[in-house]
Each structure stands twice: as C-alpha cells, then as structure tokens.
Image: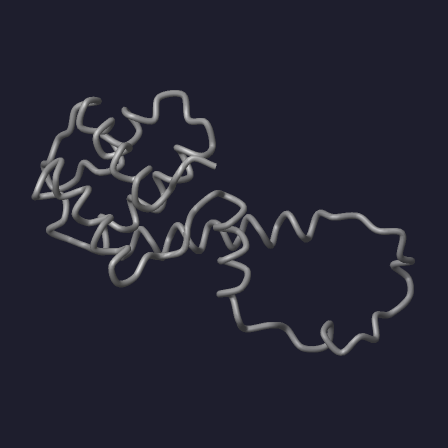
Length: 140
C-alpha cells in the first residue's frame, strides 16, 4: 500500500513539474483573471490518472480482471499473492516496463515481485510477464 501511495505521489509530482515547465506566449506581467487560477485544485486523482496513463500504468483492475491478474501471479508462486494489494501494484507497475521497452523485463519482474524473503528467477519473471500480457497489459 505504501508503495502505491509513494508511486502515485511521485507520478503526480512529475506531472505537475512537467506542466509547470511548459512555455507560452502569454505576457507574464499581466495578472491572470481566470476563475481556475484563483482557487487551487484539491483533486489529485485526475493528475495521478493522467500521469499513470502517460507511464503506461493501467487502472487498478477490479472484479474478474483483478482475480485473473492475481491467478496469473499465483501460478508462478503462491506466496506472491499473500498481499493482494502489493501484487496488484507490482503488476500495474510492471506493465510500464513491458510497454515501455525495458531492457530486461523478465529480470525487472523478478525484482519487482520479490519481497519478504521471496526470491524469483528470470524464468519466474518471464512467466509473470506472460500472465500479465494475457490479463492486465496486453501488447499495444
């Protein structure tokens, strides 16, 4: 859960930073009078969703899709789904590596899903990636 919160916060901060760096032809000496600039937005879910989408991180699966993702991970190692939220977070983040052209996505999956003394091989990572391609992050 902490990983998801930290990841979401970092992605949101990155998105805000990128938006703040954009240039425009507006005269900065003129005061801005739009309503949206007078009140800061408190809804970060839209910013986070946009940043996650830009990073090829899919929305959190629910229902049957969530169960399918967990089953694919469970097939590799049953201990990986002991913390379902952690497994789903790792799966969503792994989609970014798969769709973003990671150099060694099998190794990345093995590292991403290893926790609490669970160690995985690159072959385990390859099987996780196969399951994720079938359930959560098909090739684009």
